[in-house]
Image (cartoon, rainbow, N blue to C red; front, side):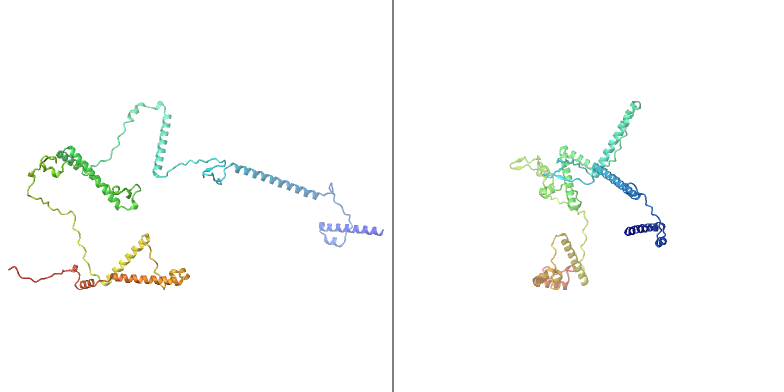
Length: 427
């Protein structure tokens, strides 16, 4: 009994304590619940069927709804991805296709068939573009006229207007100026015909025409020779392999006459076939004892200007002139080196600048480098002595130079004269 009562009291005390704790949180009266436990009966919450309360069922329902929403979102995203892939497969890809080649290096497609690319040659020259625009304009104009003609019927066609279609005003020709010397040539040709006949006059005209063309050709060749090679137009030029005849055409040769003009006047019959006794039949009346001396004609050129007289320069002027000449020679030498016509000189190595010029080579083997530098110094000194020896005057040249300094140059004024004594022969 004692044990049963004790157990009952213990269970009742635990139940009261739990009820007190619940009331503490629900009512907020902590002092009252902490001081004493009210002996009120604990009302049990109604349970749902199956032993679960409503809060647990509500949580399970919310979790199930969230799972359904998540599954619907995943399904919609999967459908959208499939549609995007299908659309991407239908349109052409922006990436370039892989280049496939066969054993011979020709392009093939994915089925192994040869790809034939038709090359369309196009030109971007301004001349072709202008021609294309002109052709397009002409074609458009012809199409417009054909369209207008198709729209206009027989009621609007007046046959009387066709008679005036061909009566268009003739275009005025440009002014034709008479070339210089045209009438002079016609007069000369008329005189030749009257003097020598038509046949010979034509031959002389052809000869003069050949000479004129030859002169023009030679003048053109001279201009080409003096022309800047960078301005010569691209085209066929006479090469050295074709010979000198291709570069400079020879003058046209005249026809060999039956009788030369200087023999025609002295031959009686005007032919070389008139020979009697081994001698030509010559008209001796054409010869006389007089000798014709042509009148000398002065050249049409002006007399050349006199040469400038040499001036005696001072020491400072001579030094300045030598400096200018030396600078000009050095500039010309540098220009030839820059163009690759001559090799650049070797660096002037001395003992003082040995390490600065040779650098790594002098560090690797200084003894050999010093020996080579001393040899170069000896060569330069010997070359300097040779130049001085070549400029040294001979004793005769030295005497002549001294006399020239004392007496001055002949161009400065006066000349040398010699006088010889002799007997008086003319009384």
